[in-house]
Image 1 (cartoon, one colour):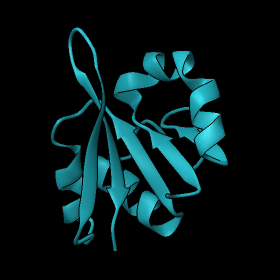
Image 2 (cartoon, one colour):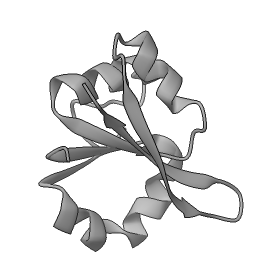
Image 3 (cartoon, helix red, strand yellow):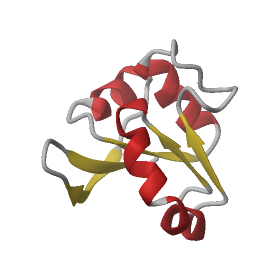
Image 4 (cartoon, helix red, strand yellow):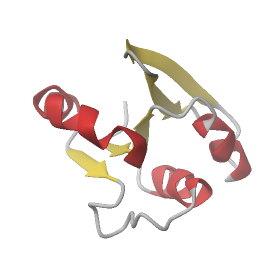
Length: 97
């Protein structure tokens, strides 16, 4: 498991309800747009590169987010459906390489 987790901007409300759970699993929870190294203007590919360089998983509601990891030069990811919501599902993306 990675030491840190990046929270994609599309589920920032979800993370507020799961902060305690995430804090038990990860040393740092890094929300996009709220963390100085992850500004909102970052592309999804830049966020994927950040995850690779900083030993991070990513949690997102974006069903295509994993494709940006491949665009960032990452060859293998594991995608886990964490929680179904009314309007979207929550996914954990873990870099396997």
